[in-house]
Image (cartoon, rainbow, N blue to C red; front, side, top):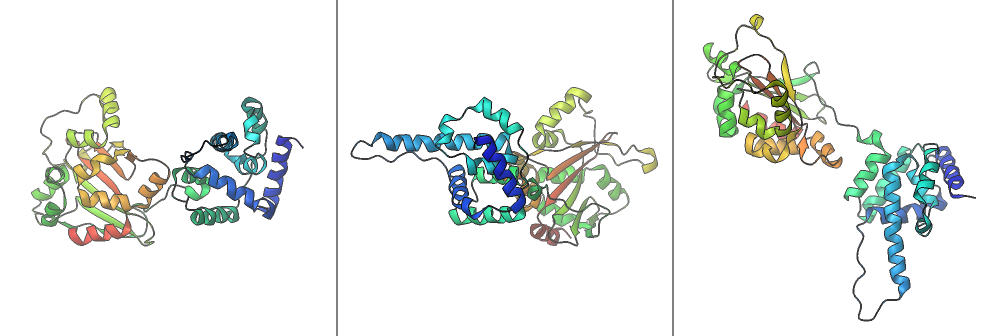
Length: 338
C-alpha cells in the first residue's frame, strides 16, 4: 500500500475509534518524544564511532525536521502521518509530491481521549513544558486553547468603585499616580470635594472565581506613558492622526451632554515596560492572569492584551487603562486600595 493510501487508512481508523489503536501506541510515543525533545549532539568517545551511528543520528534529525514541517503545514493529518511514515522513510521524502498528496487528505478529528493520552505521555516523559509540545497542542487541539474570557460590565460580579486616594498614592508608581491625579475625571471629583475617595480606580471580580479580575484606571493623557506601553501603535496613530495637542491636559471633563465620548483604543502593550510604568504589583497581577498564561503558551511573549488603553477623542483627551489581572493577586490589590 502506498504511503498516501496508508495515511488515509489511518485517518479512517482514528475517526472511527477516536483513540490511538494499541498497535500504534509505541510508535506514537516514540515519535512524539522525538519531535518534542531537543536534539542532542553525539557525546565524544575515545575511539572513532562507526558510520552507522552517525547515520542513525542524522536519520532522526532529518525525521524530526520532516515531522515538524508536516505539523505546521498540515496539522489535521499530522498524527496519521507520524504513525505511517517512519524516520527511515523520511530520508527519501519527496516534499513537493507529498505536499500535493496531503492537501487532498481528509482531516482527522482528534478526540479528548487522544488529548488526555498525549498529555499523560508528555508529563511522564518530561516534555510537557517544551516549546515544541506547547505548539503541537495548540495546532492539534485548537478548541482546548481558546483565548480565556472574563467578565464584562454587564456580567454578574463584585464591583469595587470607591478607592482610597492615600492608598492609591502608595500603591502606584509616581509617574502613573501623577497622571491619575491630573485626570479629567479626578479633577471633576475634586471640584465636587471628593478628596479621600475616587471612582477613577475600579475593580471587578467575577462570581465565577476561576476567571480573571479586571481593573480600570483613569489617567490624564501622557505622551510618554502611551509611547512606552504602545510604541508601535503610537507611531501608527501619529502617522494617521498627527500628534495630540500638548496644551495643558489638567482640566476636568465638561458636562457629559457637551462631551464626545468616542475614543481611540490601543492593544498589545509592551510587556517589558509594564513594571516600569504601572508598578511591580500590577505587573505581577497581570502575569498571574489566565489571559497572560494563555499568551505565553501561544508564544505571545513580548506584547500582551492584558492591558488596553482608551484615549478620548475630544480634548482634554482623558485616558482609561483597562487591566486583566489574576483573581488571587487581584484580591491582594483590592485589600490595599479599598
